Amino acid sequence: MTKTQPEFYKAAPYGIWRNRSANGAFEILTSPDFIQLKLADYYENIATRFGRDFKHIRYISRYQPLFHDGTRHREIRKMAATYLRDVASELEDFEAQSVALIVTKLSQPGRVELVSEVVVPIMQKIAYSMTGLDFYPGLIAILSGTNSLKATKKIDETFGKIFELSKQRFPEDDEDKTAMRVLFAALGSEPMGATFALSFDTLFSGVKRQPISGLPWEYTFPATGPGMAFRQCRHAPVNLGEGAQDVSVIDVDISRFLKDDGANRNHMFGIGAHACLGRGLSLSLWQKVVDNMRTNPMKITHISSSQPTHKVFDYPSEIHVEISE
Image (tube, rainbow, N blue to C red; front, side, top):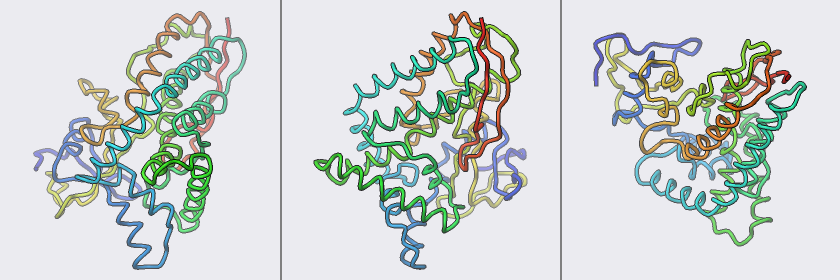
């Protein structure tokens, strides 16, 4: 696979390869030359070779679809699909409650802090609806291979608490179902929450007493929380064309699917076998919100947004708006 123009570049500050366009993202995500980062192998190796055994992370890594390809990935996806089918009625209730929460917050005069009053409650609701377990923020950091040993130990201990809680509340679960329950409780909330937070911030940024119904509400998200997706080469380094002839790892900028003219916006959820398991639920919830906001009679003023404090997803830690008649 080669390119005739410098589509890929080394991004600061770490010098990791990245795409410049949606076409570049599509090329990597559909290329047989690239696979998921082998983070499951990473946690196994640091346990066996260096004596740093984060046993709970190592265990849940065996069930994280983003850490696997091929046969094991298909097995996990099948387990996950079965699990989600079994909690379909709970997720319908979650969707109705979440739409009602958003509509209520954006239909009453007064100030609203959207992250703490809307986004976090939605993340808590979906974790409990899917799993019957509590939401623990920050565990999504296992998707990064740059955590310190101290941070990794804390994450591992938290996973241990969730496993124990799951076994106490659902002692009839077999090993696979327990793992699925813990996986969704720990990692199933923040991608949706981050996407909603960034989408609200994108829509509301800079507006002043503007009718909510007049904002550019569309059925596709205007922003994505999981803006990047790492891939590594399957075998030897790959030639990606001019200036990028020796690429081993690449950070795919999937936000390009929302920025580039003519791009398929739904590719923000990934492509093919590794497309997001929560795509259907996320879009359904967003589309119901859009239907309500298009007829919302209130006006909105953006007051401020605070800098992100999240390790993996780059969404504001606070979004302050004021609703008025």
